[in-house]
Image (cartoon, rainbow, N blue to C red):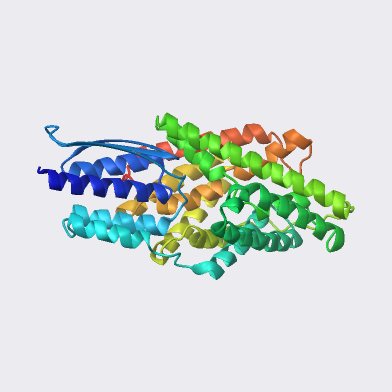
Amino acid sequence: MDKTEFIRIRKFIVKLGKMLHKYGTPAFRLEAHLQEVAEYLGVNASFIATPTALTFVIWSDKHEDEYNHAARVQPGELDLGSLSRTDELVNKLLADELTLYEADAVLDEIDAMPNPYGKVVTGGAFFVSTGAFAMLMGASWNDVLWSALIGLVVYFWVLWAAQSKRVTHMLEPAVATVAGLLACAISSYVDPSTNIRLVVLSSIIVFIPGLALALGLAELSARHLVSGTARVMDAIMLLFKLYFGAFLGIALGFAMFGQSEFVPYEPLPKWMAWYAILMLCSALVVIFRLRLKHAPWALLSGFIAYGATFYSSAYLEQGLGTFVGAFAVGVYSNLFTRIMNAPATIVVMQGLIVLVPGSKTYIGLNSFVSGQDFVHAEHIGQETFLIFMSLVAGLIFANVAMPTKKAL
């Protein structure tokens, strides 16, 4: 291998790794995928990926050329549409349908693509997802409406943060504080039946790091200790920031608007949870920027996760129904990979969002600090821990029962 070709190969691998990290790829999937690409391109390589750093070590067969590259990166955000396009690009490269030079140019095109759904549709997705989560929590129609409206206000803060670094640094506690203030104002002046803490939780559910905790534990189970530990600690700190913001907002709201007497409304019927799953997963298609051709598969993943957990919970011990749900989602996602030749991450994320107990972690933190429960929840800490373990175990068993075809 001549030096010019080696330079072209290592530049492509570094660029590919940074882009996959940017799109939210977990460390164990990222490293395995880059290893496959390096082997195909005829170089030896070793990679270390963490949420905030990437290290590449690439060398030729006889060590004529060696290259080390370390980069400080920001934690990636899920962009499953770009992840899918990047995977298709790599598939074409490995099938000799594209040259390395052409693939490098297409990578730049993918990176420059704007959000395919635009700001208005994404705002609608925030509105729908927050309302849908309130439905899943067994709220009343009033709480669903207020959660959705405050969720829309939260989205305006997200747009502001995209234009201001100062707002970005304080975004999580700020949106939680604003949500707490608005919920208290609504309860005092508009609707005394508002379940303030439930409305606040639902309106900021997009930020609750349940998925990040689950991914961190999955990385730890795959022996990616540095990345897994960093992701778990980052998720815990994010949870603390959100809870502090909500606690501050509610305290200020009670001081400014007073505390009205709570008048409970009739909760929604349990069958509405199925409709909530449809709304939530449809909104996640937009928030995660999925391509429309993958949307039906992703929606079905949410229903499989909820259905498998719901029906198995009647026969299993507390929290173990999640194991069945995670196992079903894992098998389904690997089957999706075999049929569509696309990353399993595209559909598994939808199922995990339905399963992860991020909201229960928040509820448990609230119970621990304030001694108050705003939803009926017994043994919340024990159940949350068991659900997280069941999630990881279910995915591991699924990969044994139906081995994945792709690293991503």
